[in-house]
Image (cartoon, rainbow, N blue to C red):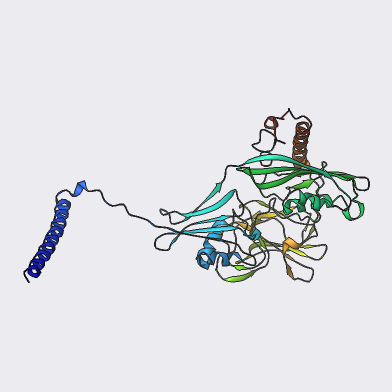
Length: 442
């Protein structure tokens, strides 16, 4: 009994001591806070962010992919409008990567989009202006040349040989399509035919992230001898950038000369979310990126059947061509031709503008067939790509001479094991032959 009472007394003392101790700490903290407020550093405000990643999947559109990373249609429309002049969303492919960053209030503050392994398009919310800022993040890369050469065996094809050498199918298709303009492989290819392909490979950490086909050649008893060189125009996304013979003949099976000197599609043909209204609507044409005042060319000879203005299309021109089809040009800043006038192919008919219902300057380019039915201008195949002339032909020939120099240096390095050609001393166009100073080792 005595022991029981002593135990209770002991427990009571312990509890009382604990309460007193707690009270002392609490009071001590209050006194310290009130007497020396300036001496205690403030706790930093902790911001948390949530990052959600996704990619374009087979059969999936951009809006659906954005929804999968919690970006609704309204936000998506705003982002797409911000990026249209930098990213061609009409060229979406499976595997394109998307990433969204949200703050602690689930507000979108950053979005990135990547279509390859070496560059990422980024838009970030500027807290001061409330607007989106664009930037391009690029990896440190360098270009390196590589020569592929071989000989057809009995039963083999150029396509099979190149695939067996480990080239990407897209690169193989480019090589074959260029040579198809000159070589009938089905009728004239023979065992013993020789081929050569010069590649310029963009490298990051020894990994190839981009490939350009600079030179192709094919020779055989039946096929004859043919060479093609890659010409890169100074204007980014130029429609003149392609493969040519040394005298400037374009090696494109069915080329189309577009109304602007470069081809950057801001919005493609078909159903889309309208950039102004935000509603789903049929887009009967393609929107091409352009600067206000940039010259617009007729894509083929024809008669002007429309030159007017309305609140939606703004200043617009329509030209009827010899095959009965009609090309249309909307949102022009100026119209240089009148109804009834006859225009030549590539004649200047107006300038790019932002008239009508638009978010900014661009050219809406449309086509109707001879029955008046809308069709995708990208599928129109009536206008052949012209032969290069003037300054562009001179630039091509300059680039051809540089490519020939690279081919010669590669051949010398192959034949002499102790000689390494210093390609860095060769004057070259930087976009395709940049930042390599030695040849790959055998």
